[in-house]
Image (cartoon, rainbow, N blue to C red; front, side, top):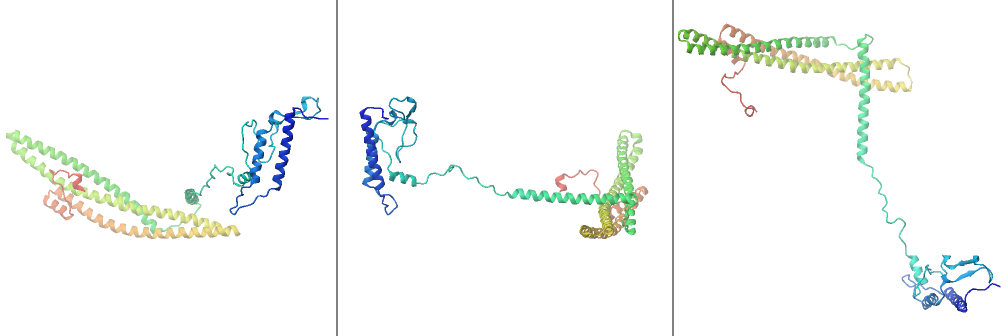
Length: 400
């Protein structure tokens, strides 16, 4: 029969362990655990006896790492020997077996302590990790998206409008398209452009005359100084040099008066041409652009009206009708504004040129007639102030 390997001491120790374990299991089976008023287990004498029995087993029992179990017969081979150190499960509930238990006294937790430890909630898995914060919806992205959509709509409308206007312009150039013509307004526009070209020519000539007169005055002033110097150094010709110097000085003084009148004339004519007329011509450009858009959308509406009538065409026809009406209102508004501006421009032109032409005539006539008094009276009539020859130009602080 099979037997156990070891001395009598080992067999006696094993028997003692068996008896004590049976007693412990019987106590544990009949033990009742009372619950106190606060939910904690009460301290029982049976619990203390259980802990003492376990301590005694761990102290006086044999070293389980030094024993082995033989599965075969007494003289069997060592292949059936399983070392107890390879068994990982604890021999008793609530006890932990270390690979190398200490030889001294060790205290194992009681069943009550084990139940209290098990009842305590442990840390949740991943409790050290912070939950990811949900990224809030950024209002900036929505704003940027809205701006992009708005810009795209603007570019789209501009592209469609440019295509229609270019198509209409080419049709008019090649004689295949019709255009809206206001004969009276077109005549006034053409007359304004012709008048502006002629006034620009007069302005250019007046500036040239002013420049030449300035050069003449500079030469006369130098010649008068030379005559005056020679009259001092030539006693025999002092009288002749003297009255020639006086004549040149008088001519310079009258020339400076005429130069002031010419500069006033050039300034007034330049304002009329480069500002008043140019502003009216800018309105003409806006009017022509509105007229081209009006004709382009009018042609588009006519083409849709002649096409087949289905659900898609009706919606496009309504949209074309709306665009046509808006461009028609814009065209009529600019046409009315242009008519008013042309009327005011004509009145302003007559008023300004009447004053400027009268000034120019009186100043030129008085200068070449040698009538210095009449020339000065002309400048006073038009409130023209001349700078004295010796006066210095005021500083920029005084001009403010």
